[in-house]
Image (cartoon, rainbow, N blue to C red; front, side, top):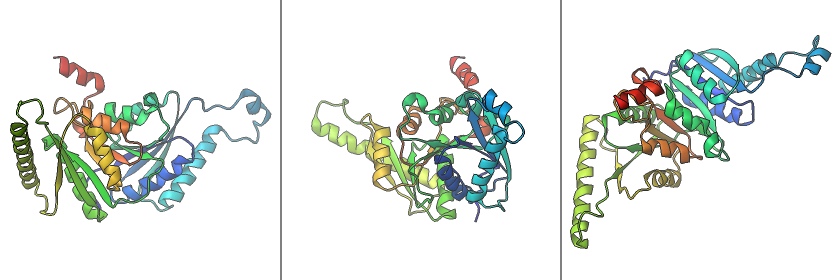
Length: 308
């Protein structure tokens, strides 16, 4: 059974390292549930040329660096996807800065889903995947180096907004095609600071949680979710992304699904603060950031809309 989600054009960014093997295996597993027409393997190198001495000495017998890389990535692809993969494979080799080149290729190739690795050792300024998830034109899947190639439990943070419905539909389809369990989470507004009486504050907190529960029931009915779907409601005390990642790790989640939520309906290129921090902090669980591709603006266009 295939998902109805349209990921016709998928790009996988590879670094030419051991982690690439896991990225491709996980991608092969996940993409087996989707209809993929074109698969692009992208590698960005600071310099694709060989040293001049080597070029001259071995010019008659030494294959170019591009040829070697292309053969290497083709072999990795065949090992992960099999030689009879239904999609058409393209190898794209670029020179330069990874962030700019990956972002540019996503635009040029009209990519629906970009897949990248995530290393636990990366510092904030090295989080290229997080930056592309924030500024890129398409959905992004980040795969940590400790990931397992299966999806049994999906972790789904919700804010009950229209912008988040795509994440719900995606999770619902995953539940159907790979028999996964979906665990929803919602952080409601805190009650502290409103009232001086502790008793009154306790009562207010209960009312706010009851309101969140009703919002969940309305949302659940609106999206026609099965009765078995539940949502954990937690008061947001200022550390929602940290708390969400902790709960996802504790419950053994295999994938975090989150919608990129812009400050305007069309500017989802600017992720909401919760999504942005969750993507930046999470280093252990695969996470997919869903974007409504056709409605995205480029980064500067989105900023212009916010100012106008």
